[in-house]
Amino acid sequence: MRKIVVIGMGYVGIPCAALLADVEGNDVTGLQRRSKRSGWKIDVLNRGESPFEGNEPGLSELIARVVKNGTFRATEDVDALKDADVILIDVQTPTDEQNIPQYTSLREVSASIGQLMKKGTLVIVESTVAPGTTQNIVQSIIEEHSGLKGGVDFDLVFSYERVMPGKLIHNIVNLPRVLGGITPQSAERARDLYSGIVKAKIRVTDVLTAEISKTIENAYRDVNIAFANEMALVCESMGVNIFEVRDIVNELDSRNLHIPGAGVGGHCLPKDPWLLRHGLYKYGAWHVEPEFISLARRINNHMPIHMAYLVENALKSRGRAVRDSIVTILGIAYLENSDDTRNTPAGPLMFNLQAKGAKLRLHDPFVREWDLAVTDLERDLTKAATGSDCLVLVTKHAEYFDIDLKKLSKVMRTPVLVDGRNVFDQAAVGAAGFEYRCIGKVGAQS
Ligand code: SAJ
Image 1 (cartoon, protein in one colour):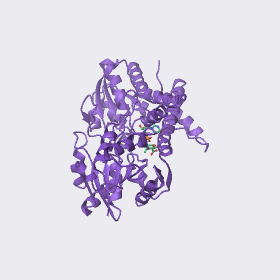
Image 2 (cartoon, protein in one colour):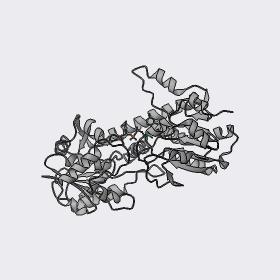
Image 3 (tube, helix red, strand yellow):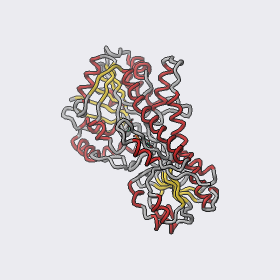
Image 4 (cartoon, protein in one colour):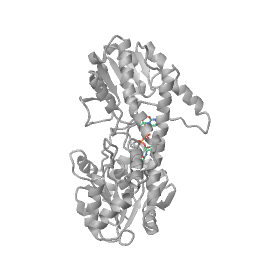
């Protein structure tokens, strides 16, 4: 029996732990701090349920099965690390306002592992880290607390996840896996573990290459989205529909203009480019300034602010000042049909509108709670729209594609609609009496 401990019961740790627990010969313990924010997940998981509200195909059944079979349980007891053969680190690695990585959790769990793990354990870092972190921080802390030597007395691998809310199980099973081992033996042990759950290619390389691959993978996406967003602002200012332009451009197989929108949220793209940049500096490569990374983050972070500008402009067209208006934000999650609010563009938009004096309402069909919310979250769309002066859509949840525009325009005080994800048809919105703006399609009117 291979005893596995997965530290961090989040969007990465839970599906990975459940999949591993479903493999013959594996016994998995999910380790989670009983904090106010996440401790409740321990009890939900031990009831055999998924703690996620969004659509996660296959996850609930998988968790129910492995808990019933007794091959998976969650706990807050770090002593579970003592007899682990394999330890996966799946804790959050956020960046702060200065875009510096915050490794408090990573350092704490590395110290616990060093203090408690037995000789011969395989440790795998799945959390996204700045290049150089696995060896310079995780390995050093484990060696310091254990007196053991990495690559000799224990094995260490960096293997990054490619999960995405809505595809947690699918992506782990079907996307290629990269293993960066401090020794070939470390990588081969990890290959043996992952081959039980990954159907796609498993590729072995060194730790630094794996760490840089992960951060470049997401920086690439962030830069491409930023380009689409900048072109959206260009088209909007010239009265051209960026989405028609995108269709034309992408007819070429060699082009893939991304989708402009209300902003870029999530736990990957807003921070991974900064982790890459930070790793560069920690390596002393000060002569290189990755300007694309900083510029892309600046453009993507501007999109929610541009949304607030469109709200102000649309209300003005209907004779209302933002400060005298009730604005309803549609979609708090950073991604459609998910309950994940991490770094959601709805945050900066909400605070910007609040600073302009608007009274806010927040609607989302999936999000249960949001620590930044300035008012209660509403689940009933009609209630959230009644008496409101503006609906501003941030997230393209499926529910919003079926909105009865005529019904909502009747219950609103001022029928204004600002579309951050090109959900609505301009003619239909106009026919329902709305003042309409849309990122990249219908810009500010004088
Ligand atoms: N977004 C755009 N335009 C786009 C694509 C996304 O504005 O063309 C916005 C989304 O609305 C969202 C944010 O960007 O707010 C992030 O969207 P995402 O589709 O990149 O979703 P993530 O953050 O879950 O990205 C993850 C990443 N996976 C990992 O880091 C493990 C990313 O590398 C993947 O490319 C993405 O999933 C995916 O495509 O599956």
